Length: 314
Image 1 (cartoon, rainbow, N blue to C red):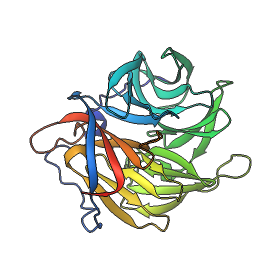
Image 2: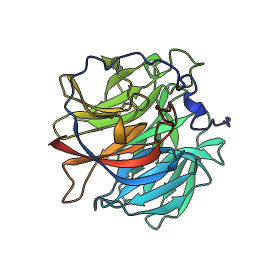
Image 3: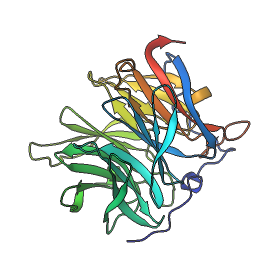
Image 4: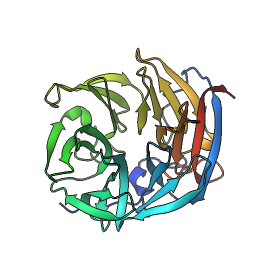
């Protein structure tokens, strides 16, 4: 199915610079940590997602450009790959290749593979898909992919290139199909449970996964959480980007939420991932679009990759 892909700004046109966001984080406790912008990109660069390899190199998708940038922890960056179209989610397969979601030629929802040398190929056009977004490894070479407008999660086998709906549920969909905010968005698996954000509904879901890799019934875990993408640490703490709310929050396994970064370097924060190098395993890397979806006072800023040292107070 082909759809007209909206620009990164129009994707979130339901809100604009003059809009008043619901104050869902007004009473949230704060423990502001030190942030450092390690790399910057021109204004109106929509950095969308991030994956980190075993050596600690960051691979970042630029939504509208269709580019993947490779960034080392000291901030040196280079163009790693270019896909003809628009790209969103990114994850590693078991061989170290990148699996990327997006739209071939900006029109056809597709899944791509980018080899270790940066060579891209289209694995499959997903018939019936609308807005392929967050992606996470399920098992072997099988991935789960959020479809933010269809209100479903696809299962995609990167070896056979076969795909099917893994889960469709009202809780994954938008409450108002006319709202351009995404429904199901970020996906991560921890301890046999899939965690998923629904940005438009401002909820965080849990979906149990059985021994055969099949989903149980999704349950709303937290409400009034404007989550985009997130990462989970070994203790089960979630670190969540909130995009138009311009903050990063930590959520403990019992659901307690704390703001650990706000405004400043994290305006328009879209995704994050843990460092994997010897010197940055206690850090998270946040990617931003500088406020393209909801410009801050003073206008859209440069896009950034930001390092947050966990445990280091500002």
